[in-house]
Amino acid sequence: MKEHGMNELPLMNENEGIVLFYPNIPPNAVDEVSKVLHSRWIGQGPKVAQFEKEFEEKFCVTNTALAVGSGTDGLHLGYILAGIEPGDEVIVPVFTCTATNIPLLYMGAKIVFADVDPETLNINVNHVRQLVNERTKAIVCVHYAGLPCDMDELMAIAREYNIPLIDDAAHALGATYKGQKIGEMTDFSMFSFQAIKHITTGDGGMLTIKNKDLVEKAKRIRWFGIDRSAKQMGHWENDIYEVGYKYQMNDISAALGIAALAEFDNTLKYRQLLFAEYTKQLAGIDGLHIIGTGVTDREHAAWLCTVIVENRTDFMRKLRDNKIESSQVHYRNDRYTVFGGRRSDLPNMDSVEEKYLVLPLHHKMTLQDVAYIGKVAKSGW
Image (cartoon, rainbow, N blue to C red; front, side, top):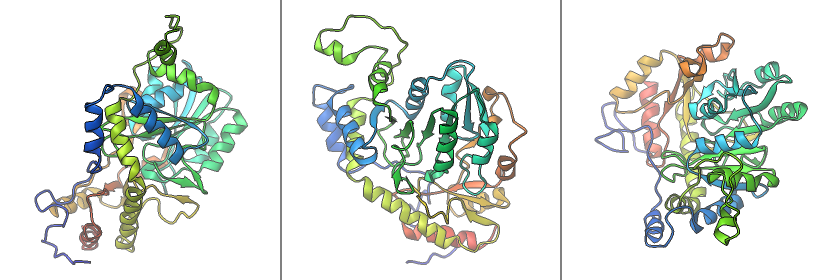
C-alpha cells in the first residue's frame, strides 16, 4: 500500500481530494437507459416490472417489491398500508433523515421520538419498550449507516402489541440480521435509490410488503387510486374510491436499477472492504472510534463510516486542511420546528450530538485513500 506524506494529496483526485459521496453508475447503465429511450415505454412500463422481479429474487423472495419514485414515497405508502391514521402514535428514531418522519406529518400522526443506542446510533430498544402503549399504532426503525437494528427485540415488542414494525432500510441494502435479509423480516421495508446510495436510479425507492393481500391496494395508491391493470385491459369501471398518489417509478430509472443489480454483489463487497480498512486504520486512536464495529450477529451494508470523535470541529478542520471531506449528514429530527421542537428525554442523543461525524466511503475510493485518512487522523487534531 502506497504511503502518503502529510502534505501529499490523496489518490482519489488530486484536485478535489477525497469527497464524501460519489454516485455509483455502472458502465452498462448507459446502454440500458439508451434502450429505454428508444423504446415505446419511458414511464412506468416493463422495465419497472423487471426491476421489481429481479429485486425480489435477490433481496426479499418471501415479500412483494413495489418500485416507487423515492424512498419517501415508499415510506408514506407503507404507513398508509399499515393503517396509520390522524392522531395515532408512532414510535420513530429521533436520529435519521427527516424523510423517515415527514410522511407521518402528512398523515397527522403523533410522532414519538425514541433515543439512540450510543454504540450504533440505531433506535434504542429499551427506550422503545418504555414508550410503547395501547395508543401506539406502529414502530419505525432505521438501520443507520447500514448496520441492522436489534430486530429480535423490536419484533417481539411489535408482536406483543400487535402492531406493525416498519423498517426504513434506506442505508441497508444487502445487510443481514442473524442470517436473514433486511427487507423480508418486517411488515414493510423501504429501500432508497437516491443519488448516493448503493444502487441509484437517479432518485427512487422500493417498498417490500409481507402481506400479499395488500399488494393490489398498494399498486392502486401508487397510481392515483386507479386500478391500472384493469384500465389497461379495458374493463375499468372508471371509479376511484381511495386517495392515491403519483408514486410510481419510471422505466428510465428502472433501467439504471437493473444495471446496478447486476453488479451489486461486487459493490457491496467493495464497500465492506473499505469499511474494514477504516476499522484497521483508525484503531487505537485516542478520542475516536467507529460506530457499528464488533457486532457479529449481523452484516453491515457499509453505506456510511461514522465515527464518534472528541473535538469534532477541530477534527473536521484537520481533515479539510488535508483535502478530506466530512459531514454530520443526518441530524436529530427534534431540532426542526416542524416536529415540535427539541425533546428533553433523549440523553443518549444529547451525549453524542456534538461528536458524530461521517467520513468518505464510496466506490471511487481506494484502500490507499482510507490509509491516508487514517494517517491524517493518527497525526492528531
